Image (cartoon, rainbow, N blue to C red; front, side, top):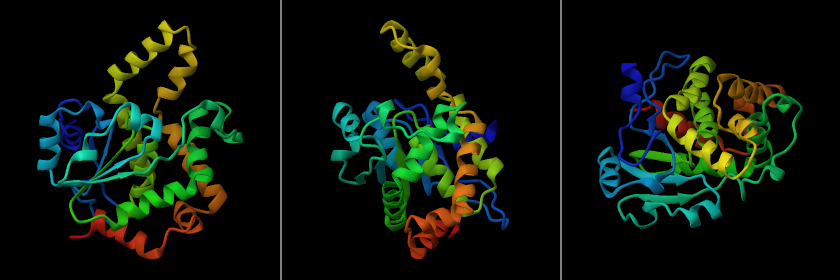
Length: 250
């Protein structure tokens, strides 16, 4: 539990900001702290929270939310001169109708959601990773709304690039569930009050390790490996090297 507390940054207004440092790789190296941070929606940040994040060495923020989400709940880093801001939406919208139907998603709708991002929005994923690879030194925070789905996919790819084992990647993904329980209840309550399908909604709010495991296994089957997937979507070798160096280098 101590590692989890160290991994999670206590920032007023945020629930799920975590560091990708401290993970052992296949080569025996350890991912560096305060290089890459994953998080939930920054629109809830207080001014104190902004200052705390900045004090951790933050130099870049990548917002993975849609244009509509950014307009409805603006990012405080749009006007923060000290930190570079990049809007890199994975989806143009979040309507269920735009989620592809995949054979592997029969029992878990999130798998279809994730495969849509990786397979049908591969240019966006490549752009996000290239942006991280070319960002200036310092901590980079990438985030969506809950810090679970879009953020979880990017985090999984980055940890794969670093050479972190699959079991650890799945554990990092599912760790979100420990921190967003209150947010999940709030969202389900909204669905309940509006007469929506709370059971269906709850499936999309889960973060079981099996969901990410199935997603990555599908990428392995289609491309041979996550490494091949990254090459197939056109991520340059130089960017891959830069990403490894950001997580593992001095």
